[in-house]
Length: 463
Image (cartoon, rainbow, N blue to C red):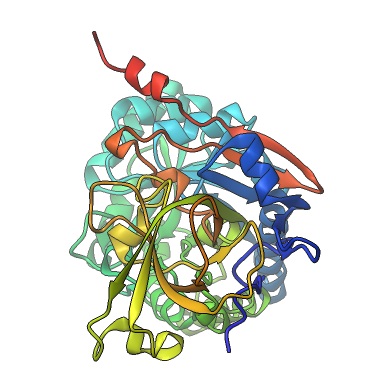
């Protein structure tokens, strides 16, 4: 029987718990009711210790395991998951570099005090202005995403009087993840170049005195729970390293295997998520074995996790407004599956946010987990769908969940694992202001991203 008052710390931050006396959920030592009273609702909450700990554990595991097999590992935090000045500082403090993909993300990292040499610049359509600014600032590496970019980066490097370090993004033909939109290594897509072009394009890069070729880069997808896809992708990439070394006159120094490590969004997914120490050991063995089979020296390796570092650290708080009960069709309905079996009605629970605060359920059909957070309840379970306030039938926050049947107006819901791709993909659809982001740590809260007001949105209009 599902415990509706349980706080599953496999999806919530490790500090999340329900208070014994009044049943309020606490995160970072602070009750969600107090957070909403101080900062408003909806509200993004990020547990700083959870984010820092995950960043440090990931870096240490990868560096330890690749040192074991005889090489080095560099970990870049994928800023696209969630980047603000404060989070960038956390990542830098914990020894991670930062991966950015636009001029805006680059500017945020610099504002956080990042050494430009610790930044990697991605993007399939970098403007000449973005390239020139990054090169002039001393960016650590630029990922070449097309043949056209070679001349652009080379020209910017010549103008700045530097030799720019670059990687070449290649599609290995291996794609993994929970959704086709998230699978980024097949050839029929906008990122990178096919494997068949790797040697030729690398030679084009090497022909420019202003460019230094570091190696190949490949990102095979997102929400990956096993190492098998990384094994095949690494094998394919390393298969051309011997030829690259021969053509270029020296072994290729680096291999970037991207990111995409998965997290649990719901308790049902939790058992599928590998321990980072185990995954790091598997990845190190994969690269070492691939190099041995290809008879090439071990390159340095790099990874770019984002979601797996910041995702579980985030919780979004919503306030309930309208509720509405609907009859279910019965046979074949989602309510006939697993723990949702046996419900004749579904309660639609509308909250004061929606797809503007979390686009992933509408865009990807992503699942999330919610709990009643302002109180405990002994009411029986009710099948619910948590929905937003936007003018879209697809405006869904949580597709299906069991909540106490007495959930109602003014209750607070806490949605787990919203640290990644929620604030960063948020919008002002229907002129709804973007919520603030608050960091919590050891009983203290501070705003790290200001929320918007309706007045600020109106002020953008030219009158």
